Image 1: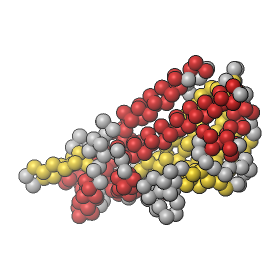
Image 2: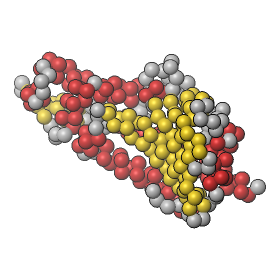
Image 3: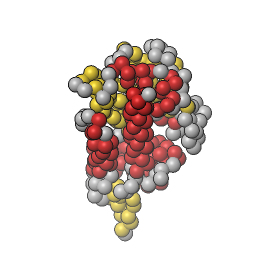
Length: 110
Length: 158
């Protein structure tokens, strides 16, 4: 069950274009070293680290430490709040359509 | 770069367009199948839908009639949430479009709710194996099931 706070957290985290670029890069890999992420961008190492921390806190990526290296991979359920949000509206409209059909049918019977 | 996603529901109903139009545009009838409202079928008219408050959201949807061509096209804005809720609610700045097309045996009724802004591009979602792609399939399946369940009344897939 997704809460509004979780959805907001994911939305806010991905609202920043640089951070989103970092996320998309990770999402395209099984796993990627933090150092590789820094190499591929013009963003400074501390800035990338900050984005990675935000992504991790929002549950969007997972972190694995091995010696001096840190690796990141996409969290399987990271986007679940967004998905729940859409599913909620899909279910909402499906239900309302059923109501509409029922109403039309009842009116026809009167 | 953001991408908007639309939710679509489409069915063929065994009634003439005028009849369905009435249920889409008469306030008392709308209340029976959608939500309590103060709708009027006038372009530029502002109205609200009222639903149960959810979390920080007061449950009021703010709308404006954008297009009204009886009995074939109705479009209104749909802004979920209130100013008091800068988070969840105000994220939804969307539009709902109803299209009615006369077909053999009734009317094809199509609803498109557009404007679900997803951060980033879809590639990122699809790249996450157990994530987005599957969910899009899930949504498609739910829609298909809703369609199939009413096939007795002459529904066709989108």
